Amino acid sequence: MIRQITVLGSTGSIGQSTLDVVRRHPDQYAVFALSAARSVERMLADIEEFAPRYVVMAEPSAAAQLMAELAPECRTEVLTGTDALAMIASHSDVDQVMAAIVGAAGLLPTLAAAQAGKRVLLANKESLVMAGPLFMQAIKQGGAELLPIDSEHNAIFQSLPESYDGDFSAFGIEKILLTASGGPFRGWTAEQLHNVTPAQAVAHPNWSMGQKISVDSATLMNKGLELIEACFLFNCQPDQVQVVVHPQSVIHSMVQYCDGSVIAQLGQPDMRTPIAYGMAWPNRVAAGVEYLDLFRIATLNFEAPDAETFPCLTLADTAFRQGGTMPAVLNAANEIAVAAFLAEQIPFTGIPSLIAQVMEKHQPQPVISLDAVLDADQWARETARSLINTQQSVEMPG
Image (cartoon, rainbow, N blue to C red):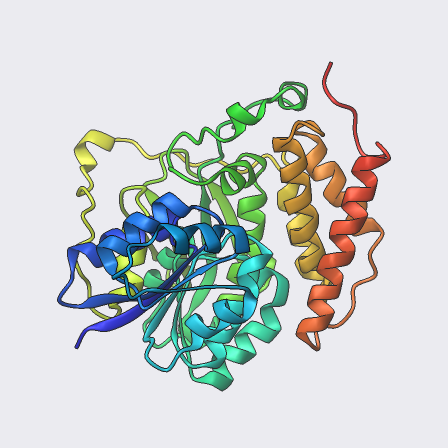
């Protein structure tokens, strides 16, 4: 049976890696729908190759340009808007949904896929960070399958017992060891970090990623968001998750058991491995990834993260412990802070400073509805922008 897949965020690095796996297995997968924000040229090429039934462009002007440039005989229907995104994520003909839209914009269609009982290939952290209780409830009520695609959570998933149901003690689990590369500035001082440029921050030593996630990796906020994500995915608390800096990015995460065993998943730093695993689970398919050469690697190093120099990790831990809408506020403030840094409005060290100020102003509310989450998200964005505009946050480097 050929499985139909919708790729949300298809022109980004995760989306393109997903399409590469599809390309390698035309007898097993077909593209039902694609979505992007504005990348018309990339989308034109993907329409020609994969012939999706639908394409959704977030920006109406991009949708109009795409329609104007499509060949007259092309049968792909071009749509725009959030309702269209929800439709292609929940359509009855869809089997799997790759949720790879970066940021809060990915929340609504990913939630729609969960409610419709799809296999959700979750690469969008924000669905869990912003609305973890709602999202996990939607997965359960919709009868959906949730396969984590983040390399770390995918590694944890592979290292847990297949029948794991969220009870650490019942399965003899001591803790999760969540690995981190440490980013491009591992070992740097706070003074050095203050003068980091956007070009330096987006140059990750091991992974090829988009700008926003590269900056998150550099600040360790990526790991902070993954900590929150792990707590929701695997039903645990932050003190049951230990972040381990592992510069080689060979071990993608581990699970420690009560008998002294540590089970780990190793592989190349290539997202096609967890993507192919999620698409084919419980089976496996070739992903086009080079096999690991342990003799060439020879040495694996581990160290504790520097939470004092990189405070985003602690901010994320605090946000999860405070609960309610605080993780959504953390996420929204971070998105604004990263955008401001990339626009050279604030320095690199201004990112955690701005997030901390926004969090201090927030009284967390229970996550009882999606509206509560979205209201907190909007409030945090407006507050962060106001702090930037009034220059209350941080000084720019001279």
